[in-house]
Image 1 (cartoon, one colour):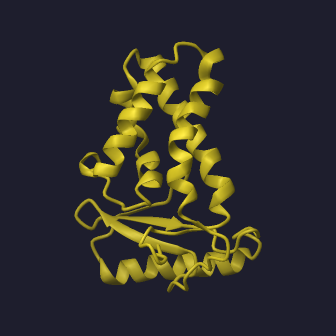
Image 2: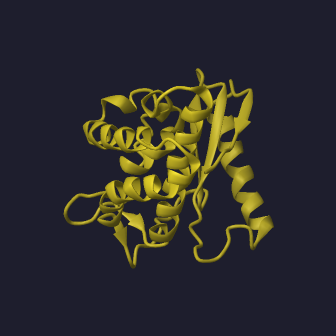
Length: 181
């Protein structure tokens, strides 16, 4: 992610509409998992690590996300709110209270004229996992408000180039995965 003057990591403006909606869904998912399993939001919070990635601007530190100070403060507040919600009828209010905590953190990062930086594979990149046997392909819609799938051939070409690049650099790859929220 690019940064702007005050060194707060920036998100390009279309995330201004996407992030609150997906964060609300993640909050509900944490609540639902806790209710279904008879556990607490605290126990379920790490199962939805994507929320932490949004709060910490996607530092991709999944194994030690609990050590990020900015996440711990927000996490504690969210757990408190989520655990007070005891029924499905209370979830809209709970979701809004959680968004009230999260939105100020997100809004300072949105830049109206942000241009997605040019990447070798356009809107795709990859990370290596499990001793370089697993390549995780990630993508962001760098073409917003247009769909990245408007030109399927172009999308496929970039995807193939990213995977080929990973395979050349890491010949031990045995598995490719791609997931999204």
